[in-house]
Length: 443
Image (cartoon, rainbow, N blue to C red):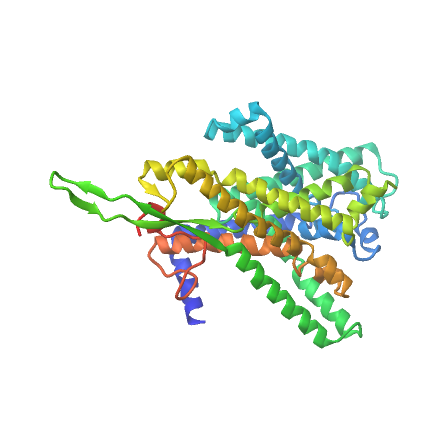
């Protein structure tokens, strides 16, 4: 406890870190306030009278931090922006024109971001009417809406998503952590206390026992630990650096440094989960009142079809995102340029192939674990766990929370160590953060 208090004091001593944390908390507060601003003309009592949301609607409400069920101006959340980002990244791999723009450096990145924002508006323009028809009008939130109400409500929903996107970008630039991921995580955590209270009430009223509630909590913490292990798992590839010689007499300036390349088992982090979840929400926005068997199956959060496709998308996106974030050829070229080599492997193309093979092997178990833990809520519901708490026992919410919290803690620890303070972990460090020696290739 003493170590924890000392660490908090150290965080407060670093002016830049303190300002970034306070800035992030301020924008998060603005986002949470926005989730309680209701679209004008809607009777919220009629929406709440329908009881607690279930299935995919409950999942969407979880990511929006309750804004979805409240018919807030933030009801669509940040997911349209995530969907637009997925589409742009897919285009960057398949369309030569987009590939060329992406290679233009900072100017290309700004162009891609501009196209992503425009695409976000287009996606919102399609999702907003579906949401209003499916949820607001379907639950009697408004009777006989006029054209002006439709136009104003759609504009508010689009503006809400764009404002949330802007808040996320500002947190990333001037705050701490990944802003978009933090907004999603905050929305999830906002529902966690209510889920715990609801589950306790279910067990306390005879649907099981307090003992079962304790067992559920133990399982919950066990899943957290397993998730941390897989998220933090690293395969170290040893690197040797050639001996450098200085002076006419050949005095050794470096006796041959050793280091390693840390290849994470889950190199893509939380993004495959967010991408897959964004894709799974699209079919339900096409025609929410359809009798099409396929669309009904894709809306069933507990069903086999939904969870199978969801798991498959996670595996695909894990490989996809790993491929675009880690370039074995670039790593091999950098090693060769700096005089580094992997013992027993020739520099150049052989090194790139060696790293690519290792990535392929370690990404498979990582992607399978992500897919497995993502569908745990469906199994938890089968064993009688309440819907609200089941969504936290694994699934997308668990992976996002663990991944985002660890990424944020890594950034905080880096700030502390750069200012010569102790890190967050006594007697060690958060895995995934590289020391200065490792980043410069010095053992």
